[in-house]
Image (cartoon, rainbow over all chains, first blue to last red; front, side, top):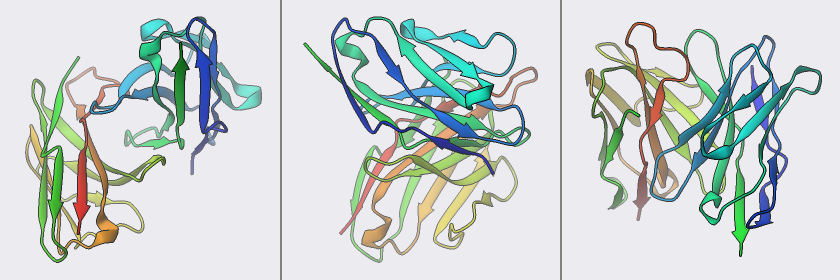
Length: 113
Length: 119
């Protein structure tokens, strides 16, 4: 069975600084990997995904993530955070065939002025 | 993108009563809907997969008699928490998959969630 680990529970970053959120996964085959953002009162929004091909994927809101098979990682990055990036971020791995998603525990991002 | 709504957004009920939560896909047909439960500061845990016109598939450890799921149409799935107890208090989130031909894995859209508090 697949599993996802997000080692950082909470990250505080200054506005304008760079951000990196870590994600490690355990999955037997080539995974489908996702990053979602959850803001209060809103549903999870897909930031980006990796299925195959180029290991550096670009997403919405200026986010990018890099798939590293050797490290079983799919870390999310943003060069310069905005106050509106304060939210909960979830990494997820998808199961081929039935479209189920397994989520990590999430990382809360706080942006200070 | 596609929109999924949930109703109600918040509900408080007494222990022993039943509560129904609706999940609707507003602008697409959802052949599959998923129900998740999220505890404070924790991840989303998949409870069940709901396919239109068939019985829901529950994840291990989820009581199917307590959490009744009905997916009667391509735009509506309901989760009924029966004989609710305080330990059922949680944040319930649904997602809907657009089953149109050609849609890939990423076509799963999430509702805003329902906060259930059982007194």
